[in-house]
Image (cartoon, rainbow, N blue to C red; front, side, top):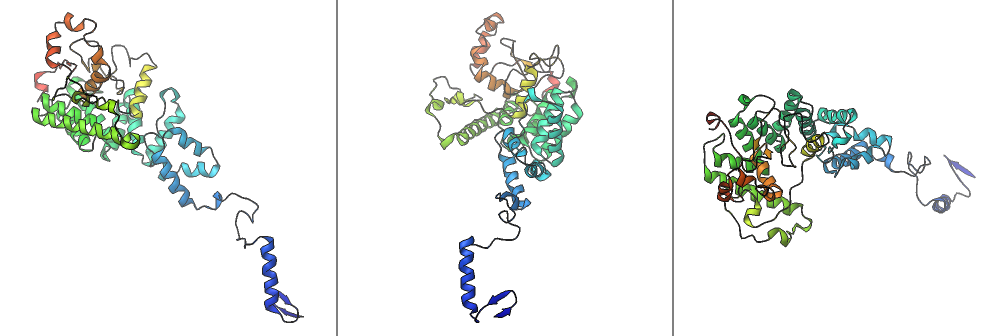
Length: 377
């Protein structure tokens, strides 16, 4: 018998000995087991063998595309490793608005801490949502505006438009704090980024000469752009990108000056409300619908913004029962709700505004713009 290292051979037949060892190995498993593999360690889960970089990449994708907070919460409660990696700044910085869609009725200190953690991680959506909550719900004007400005600096369209609304109304201050030109500038930037409400508001500003030199043709152009953008968003979010025929129903009463696609014969459903606006609406609705005595909510249900001082918003001059923070909210609410209510209760004739309603038709809810002459450029 010859000995060579750890191999014992008999009769010098090394090749035969190797063949027999190979056959025995195939019978016992058929493959070599790697050192440190889950099977060798007695486990069958390959997840622990994945590098952290790959898991973080997957979690970032989930964070940026989650359909609701539950999608992210289910990952947090799966295991300790996923919980730890999911709360890494690189993951939280990618959080989308749907992942951060916290319900007003479930607001708590832990929800606030989570949003703050997302803000500290660099999440732009968290800056916008928490800024809106602080500014309007908790009257923390300074921190709220700071967070909105932080999001606006990164070209967040919703934050830019929200700051424009604050400037238009002088929210958080007195009537003298209105800065119409700053509102138009912020609105223009948001419109450039494709914000439909900003396009619509900018169109009305040009048509009315509100904060900018009056230019009716330029205003109509922005309104048409808002129409096209609105329709494009609906088509892209529709499965199969097919517009139902009901949305393109012909209407004999069409007005080329109209602010919505319905004025061109299209019956397009309402756009999805941003979680920040939905939070505001639910927050104040659960508290009786009014932010405080003497103050009112914007009558457009997709807005949720409250007044920060008495008579901050404009009333409908026909019925006087609704009020809006912007002309864009007025146009949307007129289409989806107020058009069927305004004047039906005798408000138009009783107030002597039936002639004005007939003149403007479906174009406006006839907001009463009781602005001082010097406040209008």
